[in-house]
Image 1 (spheres, protein in one colour):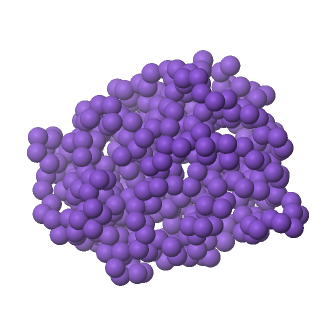
Image 2: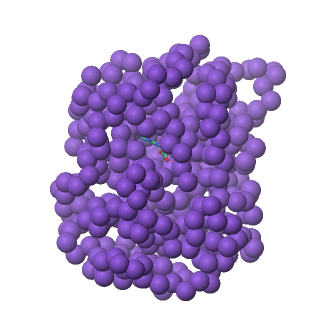
Length: 415
Ligand SMILES: Nc1ncnc2c1ncn2[C@@H]1O[C@H](COP(=O)(O)OP(=O)(O)O)[C@@H](O)[C@H]1O
Ligand SMILES: [Mg+2]
């Protein structure tokens, strides 16, 4: 069944309205699975986070901020949230399904990507980042190939806002090591320091390097973290060999250690980045309107190999009702989100285990949030999470899944 333009969902949608399918990806605190909306047949990605893991890692604030950022009115290059609900053990976010997988899958398979594709991905990402910086006053802080998804036709979409911060929030050491900007890398030793939206433009420099060359410039995920940090802070920054001249010059303007001198800092940062000669073959109006056809169109996903079946949840998830516009308690949440991060290693470092089936078993306990006297979790701290998009609909201009079968991106092993 295809996704129909203008499909209206019942705002009371909960977990029981979905058939939850195979895993699309996994991260530090949970799993992302294909979820088919039973009534319409439409496919979504459902990101499920473990409340206990979030509490243990002091990342509850990160999950609430992620929901706040994702629930904003749509942007063509940012994944959209349709619903957020919860049960006793989990938080669930129902998101645009991007059947093209992520850019890490692309590098993994293709090693390097051609210039024209990298240019369009980066233009789309820069529009997404510009929207976050200039419209939402949010710093993304987690740009890396794993967090850039491809939709059905091959356009980029940013996802994963677990590290996002409002401008002016307390800043700490957080992110994936190879992508850390120097001003963030320094925070490993200098708890609490300054960093701002310029960290995301540094991230764009690292990303273009990785997409064009196949490696990040200051070290790999298998290198010792302190060596990568030392390189970020001290190593000579050179233009990568053999890449297009404008691309190399653009990378060097982004990989400037002083954030104030970095391309993209300052009031007109987004416009300055987009005015760079690297983007000359494109117009940003055309990019915004998705007028450039991506040169790589993801193949239609095949059904995954037969695995253990996912049983339907025994009980309907309960919803702590909250209005869409209720503001998150940002200051407190951010402080909480950050507390543990100073001194922590790469946040994505815990997705190495391959015991997916085991964890899937645990995932199927969907007891509602209730007045269970034995519930040792403080459910109150998750109260701000639930979200229902009133009159939620899917526009075919930004998203179309006509004729798709179940996706095939089962548990990608990242880095
Ligand atoms: N909307 C989506 N559509 C398809 N795949 C997705 C989607 N969201 C996430 N994924 C896959 O799941 C992985 C983990 O999701 P992410 O939101 O980055 O979680 P984490 O915060 O744990 O890193 C991504 O790297 C991607 O491969
Ligand atoms: Mg991620």
